[in-house]
Image (cartoon, rainbow, N blue to C red):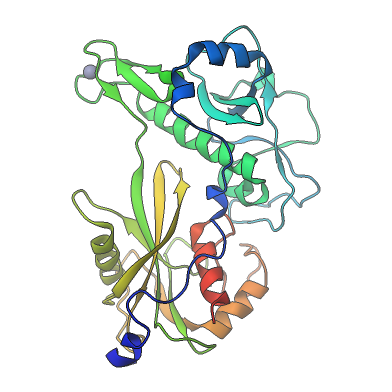
Length: 337
Ligand SMILES: [Zn+2]
C-alpha cells in the first residue's frame, strides 16, 4: 500500500467500537460522596449485598444453564450467568469492606472470602472475572470488576510506600492512611495500551496485524499490547510497543475505548493505527512467537466459529475470549465495511 492509499482515508478514519467492552458495561453508581456518608452507609447496611471474593479472585456464580468452562483458557459463549451476592450480617460494615456503589436502592460491598457466607448453596460454582465476566449482565460484570480491582489493591497496599508503616482503609475502602504520618494512598491502576494495527483499506481484502505470544497455544493470535512507561504518552507507547514487538512503524494512532483489566491492576486503553502490510515483520525474541497479517474475510470466518476454546486444536485461527477488549476491537473491525 502506498502512502496516498492511506491518506485518502484521512487521519484516524477507520472504525469505532460497536458496543462497549464487556467489563465496561457497569451500571453501579459509584459516586464519591456516598463513600464519606457514614450515616447513609449504616442505614443501607441491613439491606446491602456483599460480593465475596476468595484469595484467587473467585466468586460464587450461578451459571444459569451455561456450560461450565473446562480450564482457564476456555471462554464460554452466551449470557445468563448470575453473580451470587450475599446478605449482610451485623450492624455495620467490617473495616476491610469496600463500598462498590448503589443500584436500584441497594448498596453493594466487596469483601474478601468469608466461606461461612457462601456455604451450602446449589447450583453454584466459584469463578473468576476472566472466566465469567462476559456471561454476566452489566450489573454483575461491573460489580465483579470493581471488587477484583479494589480488593487487589488493598492486598498490595498494607504498608506505606514512604515509611513502611501499616496503613488502614478509610472512605468505605477507597483510600488508605498511614498510621504513623497520615500519608494517604489511593487505588493504583497501571495503564496499558492495546492496538489493532490495520492497513486502512476497506473490503474483505483489508488486513489486520495479529501476533502470538510464546506462552499461548499454537494458533492463538491477538492484537498487540504493552504497558505504558513512566513519563510516556499513550500514542508514543503504541508506536514504541508495536515497533519493539514486530518491527512495524505505525501512524494515525486513534483512540477506540477502554476497560479495566484488574489482573492485577491494569486499565486497557484500546487504539487502532495504520501500518504498511508490505513492511517486513520482525517478531521480538521471547515476546512474540509469530506475527502475521490476516484478511478481514479470514477474521470473519474465525469469529463465526464462536468463542475460542483451548482444547479445540482443529481451528486454524483462535481468537481472544469475549471478556477481553481485544475481542471487542477485532469484532468491530471485522464488522466495518
Ligand atoms: Zn507513611
